[in-house]
Length: 101
Image 1 (cartoon, rainbow, N blue to C red):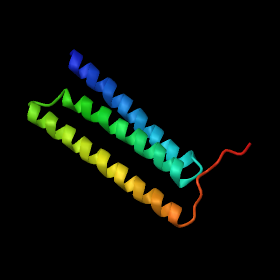
Image 2: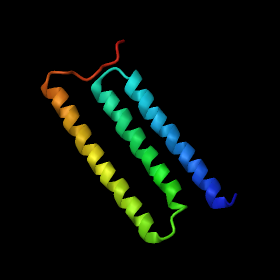
Image 3: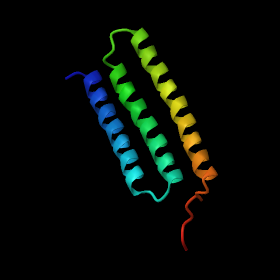
Image 4: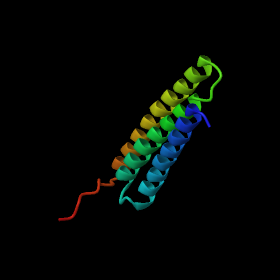
């Protein structure tokens, strides 16, 4: 195993951990707003790490640039969709969760 394979494995595992954290956030957090936050932040970072790991195995820079553009598209789409879901939840009268003291 060479150094690029080792770096890729570390990045894939780290990306998988962030995907798992986003999934746990969806299941454990109390309302739609905190769930959206956990999902978008963790999954976007997880996808970035996985794509960075995959970039070490690409044959050309053109393919790496394609991966970067795909990641940017996912970032924009994720932010837009989560904003729309949060706005719709507010319009339906859902209140953001507040910590009980």
